[in-house]
Length: 600
Image (cartoon, rainbow, N blue to C red; front, side, top):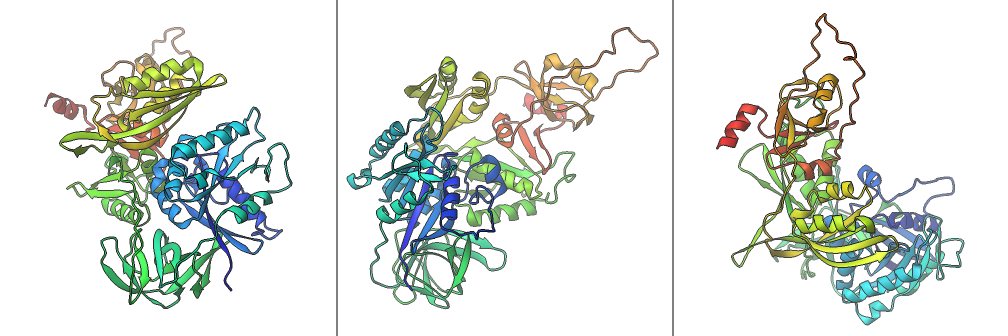
């Protein structure tokens, strides 16, 4: 019954067509009967992934092609989800590196490729989107070679095969000027170049590299069986990270079949499987033989670089929109997230209703907040703080590599902004009328940078960043220069008042929206906070002045996305998140309290 198995991980930058390619491979493997037509982006299964067009969780799917079982593992391209990427590399024998024929390899691709090269995996390069106008597949290929060389690939890894094609149009070929009918050249290439795993003889060894959660059976350990066999009902030892051993028993086993899971009684060596019944495991533990357990080398997971304070919603509007509003609800939800979200840490703050949550970046944490908000939670989040470490008695902070792609005419503005935020320029490459600039910059400097850049470049700038290392603290970074406009009273935002205050700054609220005292309803055009009353209506006296009742013309309000709101707020402000709204507010709602605090 033993069948040849190939395990491949797909690496690509956000939006280079990775998930689309997997869809086409699934179709090529005839997983769906002819009468079933699946939707687009089958792999990006959760709503947030589809909306943002990015992959957040690593997922498994398998395709049978010419009698060989190909396990495809879709990896996240964004370094905020690096916790997911590192584990996946342990399950794969080779990688498919997917690059856009126009853009070439991007910073995030480099991040994941480095992990793959360190794991000693053999790459196949796929140059995708060759049907784009003005694309340069050969240059993209050369750039990939340079990238592989710079991350320290071996000679064998540098001798990689290349396939060109367009996943969207469903074809792959060895020559980009000769389109074919389907993507079989790619699948043939996988069979030819990706090594079939070779295993030592010996007793059971499986490294737990990811986990699944089911409401019925609890946590499911997922990993690749490195050697030996696993049978239903087998007694096993769980070897923990610290070397301690817990005896356990396998209740059920699943393998991945197509898009779903298939229950089996036994797993062959080299296949990726899910195991039910082993209690209390962590990622990086080994499931080993009952009598003579031998542990595998455990996985190192990158540590968090950013923290945010999560607290219960205590604004005047609490409980109006959400189902889950108490601290117990929030704590249970965070504990549940810790079960499967590796790079996350939660600490108590000493107060019962607030928690310190640590993550890999704003995107990583905002995806968690957005998911909670959609599930019906109400909560408030404080300003994101970068984690500062003491190394040899000196303060060290996280430094990131930043790449900005923007039109050449506005490049000076971008360089000036990054320099103000203690960034250093490393490299500048012109591409047509655009230019790509590389910097290193403290993580603190990146918070809020995207908003400024988009404003300065009329929305043209594309920015990517990834964590590099902890380096000595670089001193103060100027924050937001403008102050806030704060509501004085609770009520509705009246167009008459908004109109009279338009020259004071920009507003974040629509006319007739419900607001409360202490809510941040706009940005002041000066650098101080200003309390304004926008709930005042026009006095109705009998006297009328001619021409005074012309139509009110209001500038449209600025509507923040969750990440933008988190990057925008100051230290004394919170973001209030409910299922229907994202509001900004001062921590102290009443003006007299704020004045008192200001004096102290």
